[in-house]
Length: 263
Image (cartoon, helix red, strand yellow):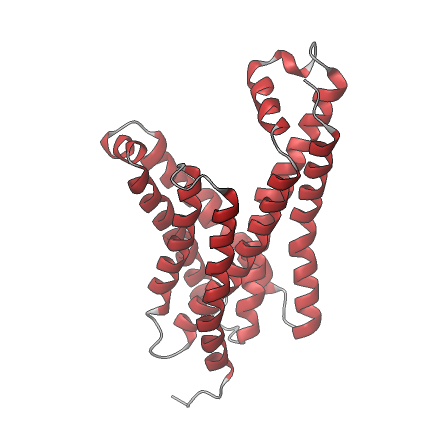
């Protein structure tokens, strides 16, 4: 099986986009705001710890280990959707809250919230799109070079190559659009959680951020479970969701930048 040139170009583009999009966003934002870099690195580290380590441990318990709860979740797409959304929301927004209230508690500039969000969402983009598609590209090139008697001899690798061969320009385009929407969402949620920590009487924005994060993941799971088979529709819903959320977040942002009463 030879991977087509169109697929190779798509994988290369996704890889470059996965790395360049967050880096360029961070550079442009830093030049515009003169913000400090610490929140950027804290955001990236927080995503790694809470989403790639702690959340994955939870997935092992509730999705992989064979017990009544995991079987119930696997058997019911709506329960799977509820678990997937809430798990992402709880772990990532709790990580955000911990970062602002503990590690970044002395950095109270609202610009730091956006810098943090770029770090959090940017690291997700790099890991999900940049690194993953880069590894697929390497595997595809090796497969094309070595042929049927080489890398394809392994059944698991042959199955992976078959999955890679199905990636086309449309799929790659949607993957990039999804990452843009996800990075924007992480900035929005970072502003909300930042406000929940530093604005008096706004603690409720932390659980609100959990639910808002979960609701977006509910949309994604609708496609994963086949309840909504149209990728076009799913990406449009995600983009619309992030766009609509911008307006209440902008109100919170303006509140953060307004003079705060003493005490």
